[in-house]
Length: 442
Ligand SMILES: [Zn+2]
Image (cartoon, rainbow, N blue to C red; front, side, top):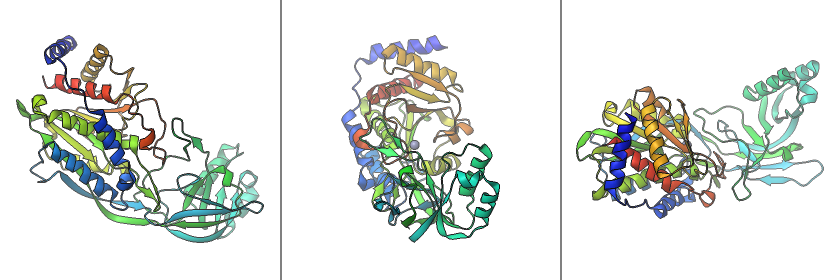
C-alpha cells in the first residue's frame, strides 16, 4: 500500500515539473493584518471577530471561492456566552515604604477571565504560610470578614501539600472576600523582544462574583490597591465561521478540508490586546495560501477543497462544534481534513495529532517530507481534544491537526506578536501540505 502511494508521488514530482512556490510575502501580510491593533485580538470586544471574518471573506472572494447553498454566503453564524473586558482595566499598587506602582494588564498583572467588574480603593490582607500551617490561625482567618478587602494568597514557602490544597481551594471558591490577588511567577519569553508574562490567558463562559487577579511577585508587598476592571458578560454573543470551497474537476462530491481558527483572546481592557500572531494568524495565513494556490486554473483540484476559518476556538472549540452539528456538506464525503493551528515556527518540525489513528496517511506525509527534505522532524501524536479537528474526529472524519515546534514560546499572552513571529518553516510546510493533498486526490 505504501509503496503504491510512493510511486504515485514520484510520478507527480516528475510530471509536475516546477510548481510555483507559495507566496510568503502574502503570508506575512495576512499575519500582519490579523495580528494588528485594528483586529482587536479577534475576540468579542470592539467587533474584533467581525472585522477579522470580513477580511477573510474578502480574501475568499478575491480567489473566487464558492459559498455553500445552505448559508448563501461564506458566513455561518452561531451564539454562545462569554465574559469580556471592554472597559478600563488598570491597577495601582501601594506600598508602605516605597513609591506606588501603576500597572497595565498583561504585563505585571492579569485579570482572570471569569472576573466581574470592580472599581475602588482596597486594603490588602495576606494569607500566607504563617497562617496556612497553623490550624488555629487558619480557622481564625477563615472566620474573619474580608468583604471589604483583597486577600493576597501567597503560596511561596508552603511545603505541606494539604496546606497548599487549602489555599488553592480558597482561591477557587473564595468566601467573604472582595477580591483575590495571586502572586504568580513571571516568565521571560525567549525569542521575544523583552516580553514577559504571567500565566496563559483564556476565556470564560461564565462571570464569577469575585475578581481574581494574578500579579507579579514583585508586587506582593502591596498593602493597598486601586483597582478598576471593566468587564461585560455577553449572554448570547453572535460570531461566525467563514467557509468557502473550490469545486473539484473530477470528483466534486469528495472533499479535502483545510481548517484554521481565526479568533483569539481579544482585549483585556481598552488598551491591551492579544495579537495572536502564532495562534492563529499563522494558520489562517496557511489556509489562505492554500486557497490562493488551488484557485489558480493550473492547480484546479480533482476533489472539491473546502476552506474553513473557525471562530470561538479559544472559548472551547465552539465554532467547529457548531459546524459539525450543522455541516454545510456531508461530513461522510470528507476524504481528509487538515486542521492548522500555530504554524509560525517549525525550527524543530511539526507535530501531527491523530497520527496514530491514520497510520497510512501519516506514513505518506512522512515519506513525502523525507523525499523532499522539507521539515527537520515530523512527530506523531495520538488523539488530543485541543483544537478544531476534535469534533470531526469524534464523528469519524479522518483528520490531522498540525502545529509547528520550536522557536518562540509566546502563547496566549501579549507577547505573541507579529514582529517576532519568524514563519521559519512556512514555505516548506506549505509544499508538504500541497504534495500531501495532491497525492490524496490521485
Ligand atoms: Zn489556537
